[in-house]
Length: 281
Image (tube, rainbow, N blue to C red; front, side):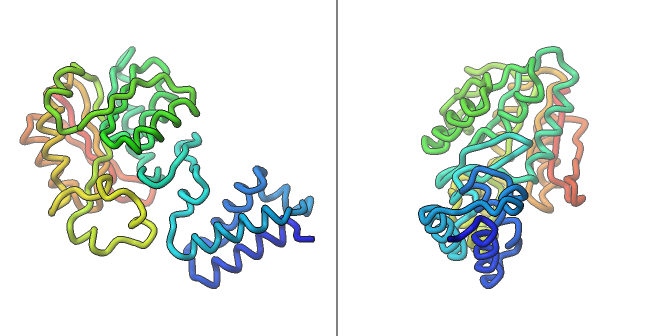
């Protein structure tokens, strides 16, 4: 009989032998996913594993070492303390993006009932996290991809979030005009350069290209979104972007060229500038 502890050490060994960056953490995620229980209790109680569970764990492990993202294999991931369904066709929520959510929550505190839109919403992780922490906000989530919108709707339901979904192109000026004005516009756009796309990590290559590639210099969406959507900000309203490493000065310039003021850089926990925000005068 195979026990949960034995299965955990077996999976961890496979990950170690294949030089995964965090074998202990990933093995824990796999075993907790399979048993729907925390690893500590599984190790203490030496819970038995069925043949089906062993086979499932092996299947995940061997697909993982070929490069498939762990998040896709588990089908779910946590972001900002909330659960999210993820899979092929949607960008994986990352801890880096929590800095963007914190920026929005802080900005939202200046308004009694802020009107907020999350552009390029994908899984909906930003929109759901904002709504969970700014209860009085009127939140919209805009996404073009039909596949990603499927995850967006599922995640709104999963988190019991009151969010309006708009399936549309973020670069459509008519869509922006129809939706009216907002107090906060937030976006984690595609921002990888052509060179970045040639040297993607194996795991990242499984994610949708349209959610990654930001044009030759990585700035296409910043230019177009700022041009179109800054017009939809109320006076004193905030536009906040996640950015790639080293893009802060370029994105600040784009904001100032579109008459946004009080631009600010915000660092993530490791100290990397992760967010650029500006205000409508």
